[in-house]
Length: 473
Image 1 (cartoon, one colour):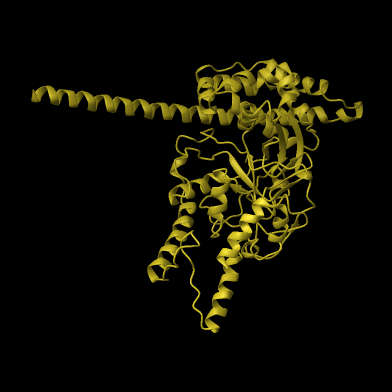
Image 2 (tube, rainbow, N blue to C red):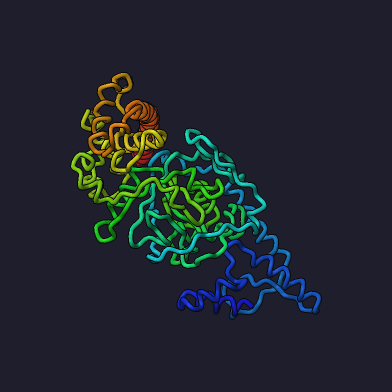
């Protein structure tokens, strides 16, 4: 049985015809239903007087190890340890609160240009017994992850961003995204989202995070606009990257979205991933598919780079030449930018480029303004400057509104009440960014103080050791 399974898996990867055969067999098992099938086989074997034992080694040619109580207890401990690791808050979060050492969210496992048929939800499997969270009706109230295995509920942002190009895995277009595991399977029933305490989840997550040449059921997105721009710059020019703005609430399948940071922490503790500094603080996963109605707009990186004001706002030339994003933001901390009218006019152009409608997308405009300002302007200005920025919204908001109007082709009737909605979005985004920047400034100051104290303590210990050596002489 194990040999047959391995043979099918190998042929599936090498031959599209065998791929079609594979998906119609019990061996197509993304949700781990093989465990149920194995239990039935073992029961049938007992009835026939045959003792079927589970092979613990990867090799199918070696001798079958004897089933022992020690092995069973070891497997149980491993599963419990993984769940405990995911449940435990990560110590890796220290020092990487906002923008740490990110890794690419693209999975180079082969592109496709053929759009599969609509994926159909499936109502069976272990995850179907877990009730997902009901999406909140108001877009101003963020969702939380529905997975009860996380010790703290992660707040889902209003917007997700996804960078994709001609090397990204799965199906990627303005008409939707399909995960690599499902994009070649038209009309297949898609299982419900896999809970993190599933026996198969750590293996699927490891394949995705380590970018193995194995299709996974996840679609990587991020809540950081500066991160998605940085990844797009690093993948150009041959790949022609595009950036999608995604309604997070609409994209979450059955209300499910996976915050990756606690998953990464659990995998590190269990030893599934080794030697990876990536903490995944800004990464989320969507299960199987993001439908077209969840995609607000798609713009190419070239569209952003062609406008000099937008290019200057996003510092595209400086980002392109940076070795890593953390170092880039550290330099911004020591060389803060002035928040002038030109900055706010460029913000209006960005909102217009992504075709966000103030009457329907007020919360998304607010989130986008916040993400740009908090991503690019570090350190935060002083408290007096922050108060000045918030109190002087009228002039800045007018330059933002004027830039939006100039770059948006609308008739006169469209603007009835639209300027007020734009002003409110701008005002809220500015206040949110001021709070975030202030918190990040405090975070950097505390981190710098800890670093100075540690350096001073090391210097004192070094001088004491030198004094001890001199006394001994």
